[in-house]
Length: 123
Ligand SMILES: *[C@@H]1O[C@H](CO)[C@@H](O)[C@H](O)[C@H]1NC(C)=O
Picture 1 (cartoon, rainbow, N blue to C red):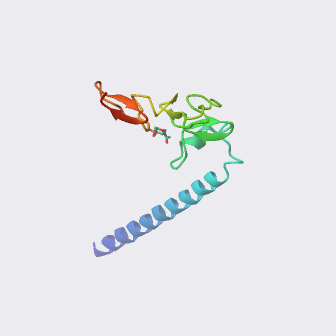
Picture 2 (spheres, rainbow, N blue to C red):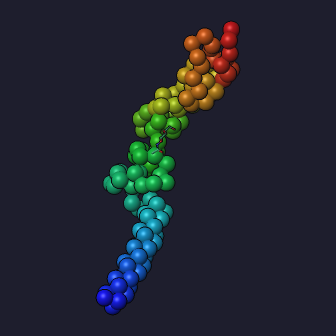
Picture 3 (cartoon, rainbow, N blue to C red):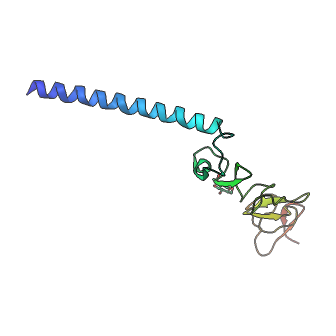
């Protein structure tokens, strides 16, 4: 009986060791994957952009982007936001006057106020 317990403990130890080694290996592979983005490009491997730490899950010109926020790829690849505009939820908006994105993305002015020079103000 005592023998069995020891055996069990040893088995657990080996398992724990195996798991930690696997995790380390996975991390190494992931880092390599990220640093070799030039080689493993998202046009060929779309999953590359789903990796944690990626800029976004969308792929434009072989690069991972976030179409929701990227001022150079706003809403779709290659769509640049004009001067003074920012990309919020995939749309180019003027944060100085946009009521839904006043000053910054997602800063919504309430019904009675308006966005003036990037600040919600009551007229
Ligand atoms: C893209 O940007 C939006 C808005 O900031 C954010 O909610 C979303 O998590 C981002 N996606 C990725 C994959 O980072």
